[in-house]
Amino acid sequence: MVDLSCVPSIDKLINDSQAKALTARYGRALTLSAIRETQEDIRQKLSNNQALPSLEDTYKQVQDLLETWLKPTLVSAVNASGVILHTNLGRAPLSAASLQAVSEIASGYSTLEYDLEKGKRGSRLLHAEKLLKLLTGAEAAVVVNNNAGAVLLTLSALAKRHKVIVSRTQMIEIGGGFRIPDVMRQSGAKLIEIGTTNRVHLGDYEKALSENTAMILVAHHSNFKVLGFSTEPQLSQIVSLAHANQVPVLHDLGSGALLNTEDFGLEHEPTVQESLTAGCDIVCFSGDKLLGGPQAGIIIGRQDLIQKIRKHPLARALRADKLCLAALSATLTHYLKGEADSQIPVWQMLSKNLQKIKEQAQNWSVYLGIGEVVPGKSTTGGGSLPEEELDTYLLALKVPHLNRFMKNLRANKPPIIARILEDQVVFDPRTVPASQEAALLRGINKTLKT
Image 1 (cartoon, rainbow, N blue to C red):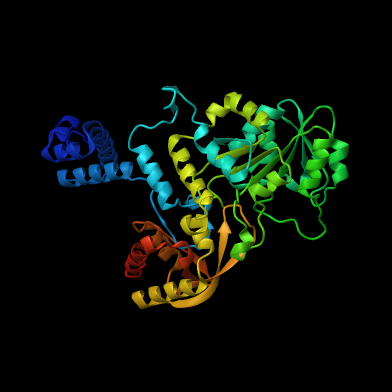
Image 2: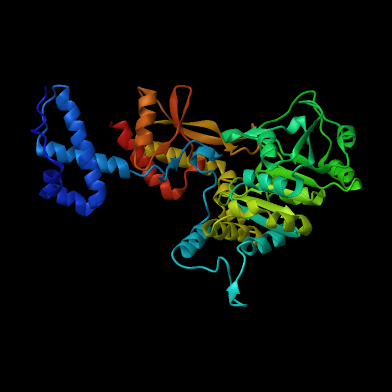
């Protein structure tokens, strides 16, 4: 039988001067929990014939446990991967004006739902709406927490227990398991599939229309391409057919491009304005993809349909918070002022001069005293412009134990996210802003010496 009487009591441990120092730093309740867990661990070790730790070692274990518990999991990171809209790294970074707007609203009270002119309760739905209407020409707008929520809310409000026509070429699944059929099932709408996986014709839409058809849903492919023997009707043709039968069209656009991507040397990505010009009644898109703002789902379109969406119970459950609305409003203002390409980080990265990227990579190599600058490719990411790549230059490092090196980069403060290419670790300057260069180089230097 193991004698556990030598294990210090909880009362003795919590009242020691070392515990009081921990209590002052972490609070009594949390420190007490850590002491209890540490004491139980000591008992277990004694039962396994391990030695009793000293008091100093015991409190070291308590402190380590407290630090582990409180170590943040959501931290700022350096994205040197070359993926501009990196979904796992939070997609679009915000502009300086958007950050300032968030800081001002977060630091105190705000007019989130207060009408200053009337001196009574107002609506949070108005804050970004006027900017979206000015920018796109839409009759009305609603902002919710993300685009999946926008599509779910729209279908729930406008098509529950009614038929919604969707082409099999657009039965998409995006990251995180978001599937069009699943969303429609949750909304209560009845999915009517038409066409085949590679071809759909206007006649397929026409044959599927019935008195119980509430809507035609057109989903932008976003993160994949249908190549080879494939065809789809033009959006304007689908809209004309739908309107001739008094059926609205919902365009799930996804990426939310408001600028012409061809101006940046990329293939064309359908824009929000083009969807409205084609006659779509409702357009849904993301705020944190090519729009370059915060995570949000934006719904724009006909006033009568938007009004039904606003009144649906899910609208409250999915509504955007004050920080999202502040950041989104500041982002939209960049577009209205014609400065999106110079102020929004996503567009800054997309338009970054290739020669400057090369010079940046060369400067990194000189500073580190190691590495080769090689041509490479950056990607848009974030479910936008699938397979589209941008020319770039990479700093390539040949290091032993590649996986361990990458792990140490991720353990750096701040974490550094790079990628492996042809048995080398590569860093892409396109996605590293000037404000993070020093942290990147310090982190690489430290890791090289580890």
